[in-house]
Length: 300
Image 1 (tube, rainbow, N blue to C red):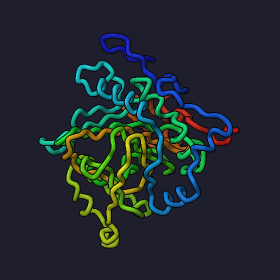
Image 2 (image 1 turned 90 degrees about the vertical axis):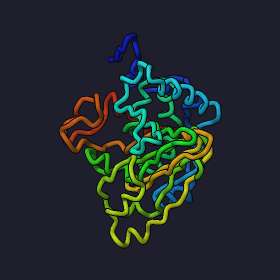
Image 3 (image 1 turned 60 degrees about the horizontal axis):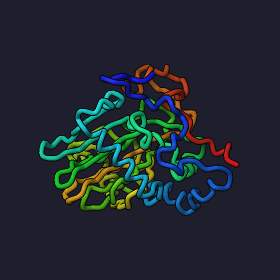
Image 4 (image 1 turned 30 degrees about the vertical axis):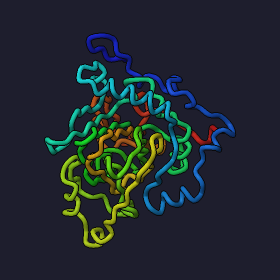
């Protein structure tokens, strides 16, 4: 049910269809084909562990999301109670700022509707090779001049309470993302490495080197993934990635949709996200907080 925080705040996790806030968040029949990745793009993802430059939003949609984001970053917003996690500053350096939150889809119609972007869903179903179910979303924001780092990590190191590892991250730029303002960097091929020990998300960029094997250190050759506003990158759950400070005069804002192939199960008798009822170990993820977003078999 909706959470009340000094006034009624509707929890949009109750709604499992687009609300129309962004427009163009639905497709039917042959319309889906125009969002399909090429064979070359799919092959590049499996070879390198990531794929950059896929257009998922237009300028107007990005504007609407940034408007909602401004409200969510207001310390007085009553919608904070809907987040699974909310960090106004998760940076380990007191001189920099890294805004990070999970659960924006519950708070407003624009962030809610991003989950149903046809470009995201078609690509995700191709890369996952099956039906797409929602895991959780994230916001990462680095203000101008003093935006903090996101240290090198693998997403699945935070997701081991679910199995098998059939997950996918879609990182969507709400601003042009460049080397100057803290774009993502990937280590191509690192998705074939083992699951590494967790070294901290907002700390020392070099800490990951303490847990790498000699051959991994030799292959540690990051590549910048600069993307335009409204474009995204997709990456494998074991892909080693991170981002440096924002020292530019413009913000670097992004929203992430994390998904998995339908059929992933709970691997622990504990909450998968704060405020979400426990799904017993061995049971398939589903229900209110993990809706099915797309079944490619139903298209046509």
